Length: 99
Image 1 (tube, rainbow, N blue to C red):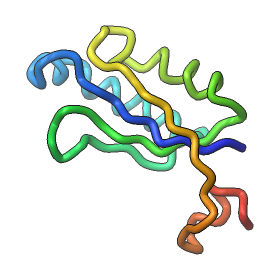
Image 2 (image 1 turned 30 degrees about the horizontal axis):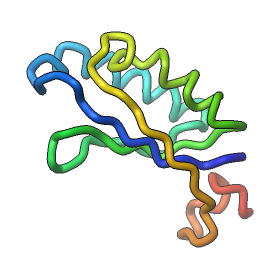
Image 3 (image 1 turned 90 degrees about the horizontal axis):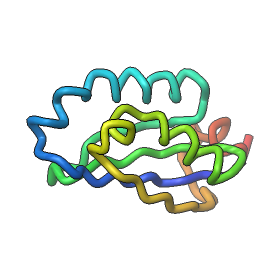
């Protein structure tokens, strides 16, 4: 399993983003329910968001985010940073595959 920090950058004003924020969050919740998304939230600066995910490949992760309402509407773009979670809290052992 590969792990990624996914960074979104908003391409529209926050008021425009609000029009699909609910659908975006429902979509990410589906990723949580599937075990792909660990956590997600907006950056404190308001310029984008951060999402921790895992999947078989970067292509799998990119395919998931291609259907995100933010992407479909052209409201955000994503940057994918693969990382290896060698240190983590014990509660993340199952998610990181270190159990």
